[in-house]
Length: 71
Image (cartoon, rainbow, N blue to C red; front, side, top):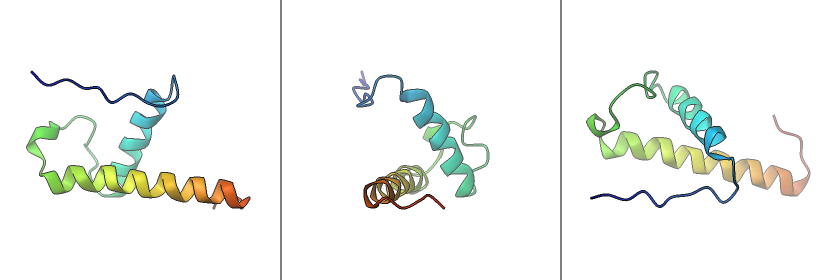
């Protein structure tokens, strides 16, 4: 039986992360990502979403640390 032990580091961040995930998926061309069965997608397609999320979060953190305004 699978267990999901992934928990956000910040309480209350889960809704934001879900919204962010769907925004990233739509940017990548997966417009129906919220309603589609994720098991029917390839590992590559699901990996693109997670990888792009991480890339954007790192970019955001770097911008915040350097004091730049977001574009």
